[in-house]
Length: 400
Image (cartoon, rainbow, N blue to C red):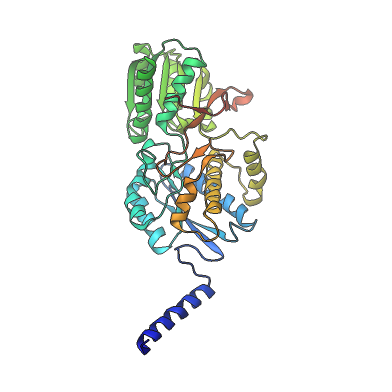
């Protein structure tokens, strides 16, 4: 062996020894004591109230896990980036987390447009996105290697809700109307309504799309009422349900209302007040197990929360507590020598996995839409105006 070759081999061995002794790891974001995760969400824009809750729930769960020794002896270090709910800013945040911060993976991104915009970066760098905070079916269908969807899609939600109206509410041949925000998530729900009407032989008598930011729903309600829609399916967020329901009460319109998961926060009922109970029922798609104290996962969160926070927990904290449980379970399954490819295989091993918060999760090599289950939740009027949603079904899956 030549002197030159011996020198380079010796240098390579020395660098390997030094690297191992300093706690470095072959995979970015991993040392013998830490695993670095990234998250991207709106902390300053139009849905900052969601983003702050989601950031808080994740951070709290990881602190809780770290205080128990972490995962395989590694503490979780979560770096959260604010994208202001802007896809271009989401892309910039992803580049920073991956190229500068050197995170192991992206644990959470809020919004389907944001996740899809950054996907080319994830694909190029081989970085998985474990939880996309959306119910847009495009995240999971067709499957993309580095994107995982843990929420039931809006498309499936609409199918389940119409089935429930027919079989459990005993509505015979209802005339269906639909109100939806005219963007990608709203259209996903609308597509589910159209497919369900075709499947069950129902007439879709009124379609009333609206643009983001709409506050006046008088024309939408007039269209629904004049068409005789007695089952109204809605894709709304926080402010819109109150405006829609109050307008319906104003003109004495009393359909059965169903709404997608974006309006399953009790805040919606507070804003709508008694108008939520004027019609013949107001039902939401519950994507999270209702946080009763006899639910062990919810009870665990309620017990732990005050130890790390001086504010009450919210719906979004609860949601992201569940998302963080998924992330931790995936890290456990990845093993003591984590790699990004190993993380993907770990997620693909989920088969009916129960968090106690989300419906059963199943992913696989060709399956990225992991959850097809919702609970039907009904708005319930309580004394003092403290109205709530309560589940009136177990986890329900679309039958087609």
